[in-house]
Image (tube, rainbow, N blue to C red; front, top):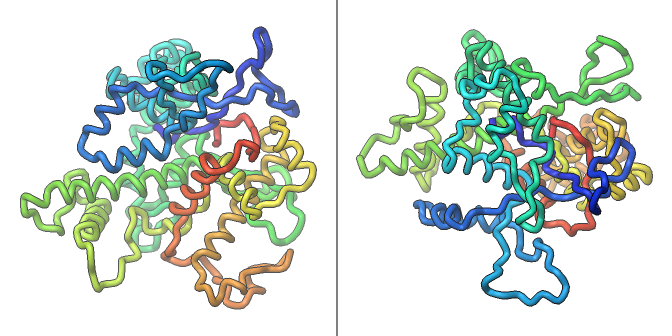
Length: 440
C-alpha cells in the first residue's frame, strides 16, 4: 500500500499572500516547493536505540535534509536553543508520516477492512487519516498537506474495494505468482498462470501505466493494440507495479536473513525456512536459499541465479519517475532538444500523455537499459556498444540477443543509484520535468 500511493512529491505554494498556488498545463509552476516532514526528536532517539543502530544511522544520514535547507532571516544570529528541525523530504517524508501513523497513532491506514468503514467517503477518510498526510513546508513549521492528498486517499479507498471484492491481498497475489514477475515458465504455468506484475495491472487501473507512442518506423519497441489507431505503439512503463516488485526484492531477503541470524543461537538447521515463509509455497524454498546464502559468508560454489525473490527479475526495467531522467540528462545520457529543454528548465507543467512527457519516459527506459547493458559488458567489449544513430542490437558485434538471466549490476542497483543521484547529488539548478499524474 505504501508503494501504491508513492507518487508526485513536489508541491505548489503561493509565492505571495493571496496568490494562486496551482498552475495550469502549459504554464510555469512559479510556486514549486518540496514537501517536508519534521522528525520528532523522540522518534529519532528511539529509532537509534532500537537494535540496528548502524543501519538506521545510515538511513538518517542518507535521507535527512541538510540544515542549510531551512531558510534563515537576514540578521538572525544562530543560537543553540533555536536548532533547526530535522527534516525529511518527498518520499522519505511520506514514509515517515505513514510509519508514525501506525507506530504512534495506531492507525491501520493500509488495512482494507479499516478503509472499508468510510464507504467511499473521501472527505471523512481524509479527516481520519490527517496524520498520514499533513506535513510542513521547508521551514519545518508551516503546515502543508502532502501533494495530491485527495488522489492518494481515493486510491487507498479504491484499492481496498478491489481487494475486498476479489477476496485477495498483496500477499495472496505474491504467493500465486509462482516466483515470476511476468510470464511463468512452462513448469510453473499450471499452478501460477500469471506473473506478479500482470496481476497488479489487472487488479487496479493505478498499475496500468502504458505510454502511447506514435509509430514512425518499423523499430517500435511496444506492441500495437489495434484498438483505435494502427499508428500507435503501446509501451509498458509500469513504474508502480515494478517498484512494488523492487520493494519486495529488497525487503523479503533482508527479513529472511535477519530471521535466520536471529535464530542462529538456537542451532536451527540452515535449510529450515524462516518463520515468515509459509509452508507449501515457492516462498519456502526461496526463503531457505536466501537465508542460507546470508549465513555462509564465504563459499566456493557459484552463486545461484535465484539469489533474489523472483526468478525473472532480470526482465525488470527502470522505474521512470522525475529524478531518474534528471540524473541521466545531467550525465549526458539523455539529450533534450531545444523545445523540451526550455519547458523543463522553466518548470512548465506538462500534460500527462503529451508528446513531451511520453518522450522523456520512453527515452529514460531506453537510456537506462543501454547503461545497464554497458555496465554488465566486459571492458574489452564495451567499445562495441557505441552505436551509430538508428543502428539496432543485431548490427553490433557481440550484442546480446536477449536479456541475460543474471546481471552483475541489476536494475535494483541502477534504479536506486540514479534516483539518489537525481534527488540528492545534483545542484538545485538541475530541473526535472513536472507533470501532475498518479503514475509517478
